[in-house]
Length: 345
Image 1 (tube, rainbow, N blue to C red):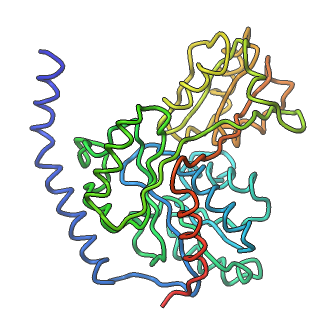
Image 2: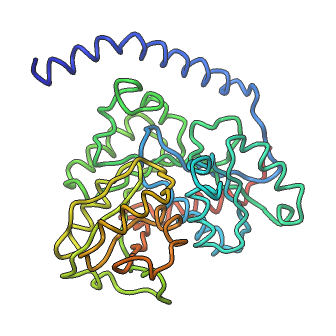
């Protein structure tokens, strides 16, 4: 049986499940639209999320928003689901460790019940100084009212042609973009300009009043485990490297390693939020023998940095990833700072 026919048969089998799933999503959204069970905090909330499963680059965008807020003198906190914490040996969240590394002292709530976590934070002296909240992966977490909804789309995944779960990767139908205030079309560097334009036009047809920004992720340098400071990206040029990652969408990371390094060994791609057990670390150490560097992501670095640098047969390297907005950056900054200054009603 050909692959196309098999896929068609699987879709036929999954279609009734998809209908039930979409119906449940619609009922849930309708309840939140009526304000049922919605919690409003006494300080503004900015949500950064997406409509699909897998990685769209939320963490760099959240970091970008935090830089805007901190630079304007705001005192934000971050609230997130805390993915990966249950499988890590130290019980801490992957993304939470990323934010703490970039913003030392930043209050981070990482637990499934973000409402309760925020209430507990605000009952502490640390929480009293917080004047705005950034929700990481908050688009579907509608229990918390927000002043600004930012939604990310991955341009490399043809997002507007995708389908809801379980056939496709969408958590909810694309029509949900109508409740977004900002849509960020990311990974624009991975597709031709005509595809970016097509996505932007289709988003604006769905939601004529939305601000659409176009962005990409850029490496601005690399950190080397056990070495102070950071190196230019050109440090990787000509080197034999081993890429290692455990993220939702590894393709952009692996493509960038191919572009910047010399000889690239077969990548080791683990499941999203892998806890990097002792057994896995030993495997990586064996695999890295003969490489001149092992390149990993910020999320993975947060777990691997606890392994002494001397235990690795080569340097362990983390690229510094930042959001670069091709268009709409000033308008986004204005919306973010305006939302952060607007007290909830």
